Image (tube, rainbow, N blue to C red):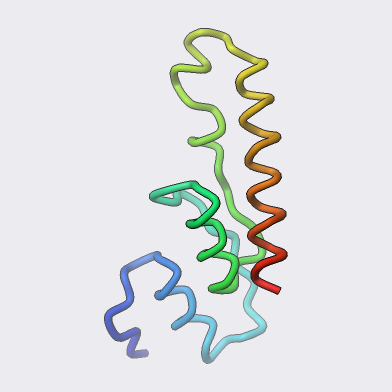
Amino acid sequence: MDTGAAQPAGPAFLRAILGPSPRTRILATGLAEVSPASLAEWFKAGVVAVGIGRELFRKELLDRRDYDGITQRASEMVQWVRAARRAAG
């Protein structure tokens, strides 16, 4: 399969995979960046879910035992995912 200039494991690669296999459901993990913009890109490309553990459980938050910070980060990321899913249609 020709994926053109798609970056391995990026949204463009995902679109290339889903082209001939539109019923495939993909959960993306190990994202290089987790931001509202990057999540929107992934959902527009066709993922059904994302794994964001590394970004959610940041080392500095764990080292400080900042559970309120982790809770706040989780709430923020839930909002990002909801917005990304709405934007993807």
